[in-house]
Length: 228
Image (cartoon, rainbow, N blue to C red):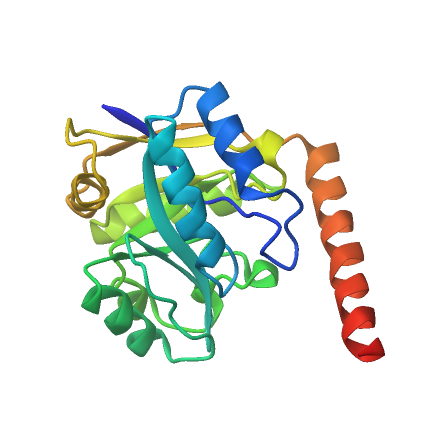
């Protein structure tokens, strides 16, 4: 059984704060076996984090959170960036062409770009797994809705801290039932539904602080672009 963080953001995301070194240190501190840094529409920091995680004895899982035409999709176990703005189907095709898996994060939260508001439940079932627990979900009903959906459609389930600061890495762990300590072993076990959830909600004050910090960082970056 491996304890894995499958959804975390570094400073490479527009709303992330900390460098990948801090995320890897936190993952090691809380005893994780694996870590996926999944920045928005960029994969370079995730590849760096994967190498750092390996040096700590963890499995470094490269990944990315992709902004599709209908919402966000996590691509796990891939090493090439998938461009934002593609259709849901084309995004999944490109993830699968790299032998990765497509996971739907916070699928029923429209304001956080969940895909559930824009495609049918049958189309959603094309994904490999559903994130049924997101630590930054303010109201638990959305996590429950994701769980009920995954159960109804027989889809594998994952959890994600959706950490935007290093301290929150490990809030939501996916327990993967495999002894294969490799990216391929973990990805295949998730795809086969060999998972359990060990998760806690991000404290509300931290969620609000992360959101406010993300807005400030986005504004600063836009101002810098305008000044160029």
